[in-house]
Image (cartoon, rainbow, N blue to C red; front, side):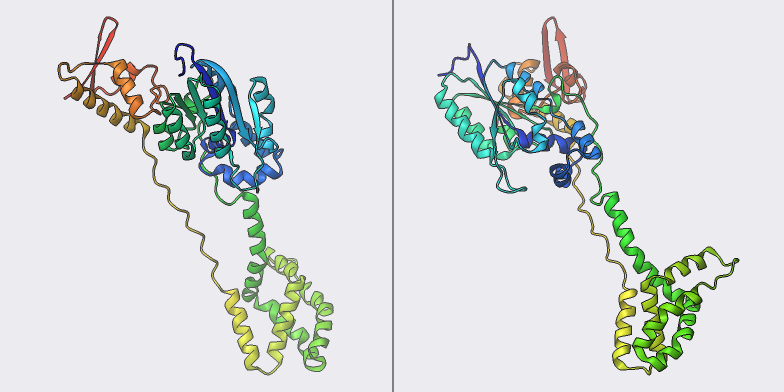
Length: 407
């Protein structure tokens, strides 16, 4: 059986999970999924490099927190260390004597398999090293719930570390103690940036450039003078020489008609002249000339109607973004947790309505291992209770701190 007088700690880090979760925590939900391809293809891009630097994991803070429980017997980190986003941590991990376990994903977006490999190694280590007393699991995936339960069943004290907001509540509940990475000593507090839009500015500019020809084509209907000039210049050629003769005469005659712009002409006329010189305008003028001079045919009318319908077709509506449900306020959650702990404590201690604050905090941590007054912005548990004087009353007598539920 493990000797609790000489605690020995084993640390297992699902490094891909913690890196992605912290990236989303800093830059907004699903940010890593949107930037995954850019990170894999060009991590040296200035924008990507800046975002990665802002979401850098402090490995030392995690290892120091684990060392506070006892002597570190082994520390393993599981990831694809050939990926640039993980390779930048190799020197930092090696300096802290972390064993790097290489994982090779089957595809770029496939699951990396760290869950199974980490769980198998942890169970094997517990039987191979019976003196292990603490198991620290650094991850946030609910797949680790069976591992945490098995470790507790084998008599180990399980500590979980994960990013707040990205850790499954079931994993926090399965651990004896859970600590958010954000609240670890040495981890700087960051203000999360708003989630970026799905369309980047570059893509928006490309789409605007693609829509420019269609706008120019639709603008032809509002310039009847240029169309009439092209028809007048090409009408005779269309009657005598047919389609091919007209096609040959249009490029030679079009510049003479479009270049006739007076100095007093507005800027719109100059822009129209540049558009008329393009091959698209030449073909459009030719088609209009042929339709004007040639006798109308049903096939031509149908084709022209389809062309007009296509030109006036309204743009596709923008996809509606799903509305995210508002996240629960952690302050309100902690208040309800305190009230529930006080009520349960009073039910068990009928002889006294006052409870020791340390016992109340321990009870709250047992109900929700992720609870931490420091993560909520309080220096001590007593300050946390004082801030909720509407439901709890704190009495300080000597070295004792007593709490009771305010009726």
